[in-house]
Image (cartoon, rainbow, N blue to C red; front, side):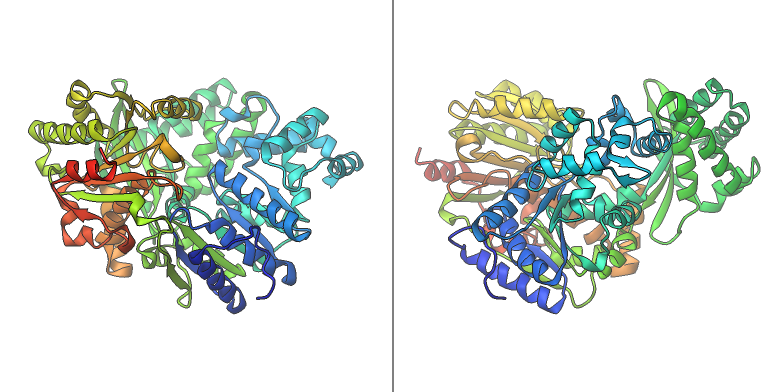
Length: 620
């Protein structure tokens, strides 16, 4: 491909190789799974050849990411291309409809409730923002004038929302109209991988999947996101709330039906202990429900009832019950149905869940129908697993790139002492872990983050660690809001000279999506593997992948946990100038089945002389 639209004057060696791979894939109309570590310049390396190709073939690029920082980077990369090459490469930034809505209080609504509430307001003409933007569903003259006068192409979503708010237009509808002319649409995963959202959105922008090149950023998250979208659950708590709202609205008959469904859950959970689980068949529950009311008619009644509730309350629990019943009647293959009994604030809670085990049931046909789909992440190992899990066609290519960062700036060590294995968890083990972590973090000149397999283990270790550490300690909270996390991170950065320690969790909020470049972070310790005793869903997952791929234990248990370890460790080195230490603390990291999963360019050394190595590295 000639005259590539690259935004910068210089191209990195691995970046050049990646661009050539993408060019070749586009010519062959081939899909890619790309493992490319942080710092390689993945965003520019994907967008440049894709945009060059898309502009010649009248294709649209979807750059999918859940990270706000990546929205900004993608938009700014396209703007840089446009500035350097003078091309009309219009980028549009769009987030979830609910998060763009100007109606008060919608942020408190669930996704289903919001969409029903939005539909109800727009259909009845009670949303002034929508009415100003569309007349009889057609883009209004006023909206056309507004759109022509605001810099929406290349603007970030926050700016679009503020501009629309000041003039009384719907930010989502304005963005959709702009997206019709966009060459690059930066959005969340579900704009392509949620079938109903994708169909609706593509229809509105007058595009088909076949006309789309899809780039998925941080793609290691995609399988779990798809599974979550395809899953559903009800609880005795949500049923109680639904019954209460129906009675309040005067819908006594529907409330009685839900009371009987709650009785079914109680009957199915009879004899179960707290935190106990068991499998439920599709027919077990459905037959019990049909003794109350015809199954399909009950769903219709609850959907109608939920509309009456939303007229007064905005949200409806009965609507979520209807949605669950509809999903429950879905496929057997690739799903499992689990009943769980637990306790909350001293009260028993029964949960019935319909869990998706196989994301490819959703993604395989979507990927097949796109012009080309490219997955990229710094932790897409083994690439074959992601190809299998998401149902990529057989001729799809898997590529692995080396870290572009200088090896002398990185010290990667495996310390083969202590373990968090379930059978060996005891007070003596927690003391050893705490003392080793204190020894390391007290030596490191600057900030450190320690990632644990769970909050429980973190707290047991911290009980000893906090008494021995010489540094200020921060602890991640499982229920932290976004603003609280941001504020803690800023305070943590303030200790870059004197040094502080953040105690976090491998699957928590700080294990990805944060950047601490330069002197803000000098060391990451990954304590143990986040492998827990397999719950019923995990066991079903392992059995399913065993039958489908003959790799159930790897795909359903080991590999995802190890990926979390690498993701956590990756917080340490975020730019070419960063210098830092990454330590994997658990004897299991030396076992062949785990050691073989480390990227070859990581060059992690097994040693017990970790303090000497740290002092040498930092020239202490």
